[in-house]
Amino acid sequence: MTISRRHFLGFGSLLIASCGIPTHAIADDDDMPRVRPQPQCGPATADNIEGPFYKQGAPSRSVLAAKDDRGTRFALSGVVMSTACEPIAKAEVDVWHADATGGYDNDGYKFRGTMLTDDHGRYDLRTIIPGRYLNGSTYRPAHIHVKVRASKREELTTQLYFDGDPYNAKDPFIVESLIMKHKANKQGVRLARFDFVLA
Image (cartoon, rainbow, N blue to C red; front, side, top):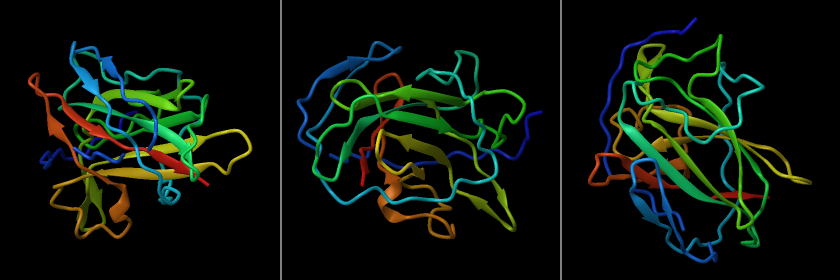
C-alpha cells in the first residue's frame, strides 16, 4: 500500500560538489549530455537518519521513474570515493524516496533501487524530486535516502536535500553539507551532483 501525503514542490538552484577524476559526458534518457566537473576531496560524508521506510531487496536499477510517473524529473550523478580522493569501484548505492505526493511504496519497490559504481567510482541516478510530507506539525523538506556500501568500509546511511526548499530551515534532521544545489536543463530535468566520501 502506498502511503499518500500532500504534495508540495519548490526548489532553488545544482550542487557542484566536486574530486580528481577525469571529466566525461554521459547521455541520459532525455538525450541530454551532462559534463562532470572535477571532484574535490573532503571529509567523510555526513550520516543522517535512516527513517522508517527502508526496505531491503530493492532491484538493481538506476532509473527509478517511469514515463507516466508524476513529478519533476531529476538526474543525480557523482563519485563514491575515499577520504584520500581515491575512487571506489563497485560500491553499492542504495536509494529510496517518496513519490510526488510524499508517499512511500512499502509493499513494492517504487522509487527504490540499487546501483554499482563503475571503475572510476561514478554513479548516475534518474528519478523525480520527491514530494514533502508532514512530520508532526510541519513538513519534512524534499529528500532522497541513500545507503552506500563498499568492501572493508563502514556503511554510510544518509539523506540528500534540495537547495531552496522552504522547509530546510525548520527541519530537525537536515545537515548543511547534504544540501544539493540543482538547476534545470533545456528539457526541464533538474540536474545535481553529489560525491559520497567514505571513511
